[in-house]
Length: 133
Image 1 (cartoon, rainbow, N blue to C red):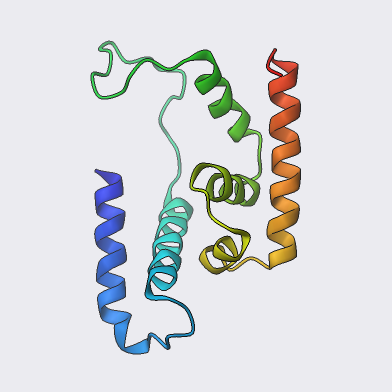
Image 2: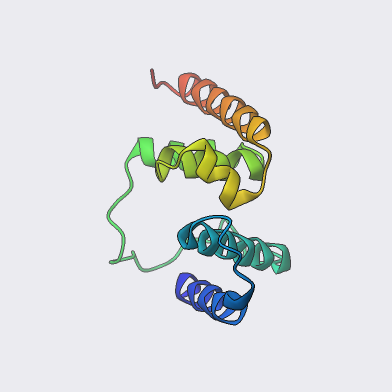
């Protein structure tokens, strides 16, 4: 439901800002930037109060059982800084180019490259220490 709410907020913002679209980038990139900013605004407003160690009594029927690698990857992503995590997820999981990541995040191209390099090194080290090659 959160994804639906954030997507709706993104499209509402884009609708009201359409007159200010200067066509310096593609409409898709412009919309992705609005979506990224909407998500970052949401994250800044959140103050986690939920007990992360609490276990649900009913198994989720929505998600397939996670493999060890899947669980370890989730843990590995948590060791990255937020900018590193964002860059790695956009590059590796969404197969975005560095130029696309720059447009989406507004981060300098060399900084994106640094975040990717450091993030991948941290992931590789973490996974190697946990038995993956």
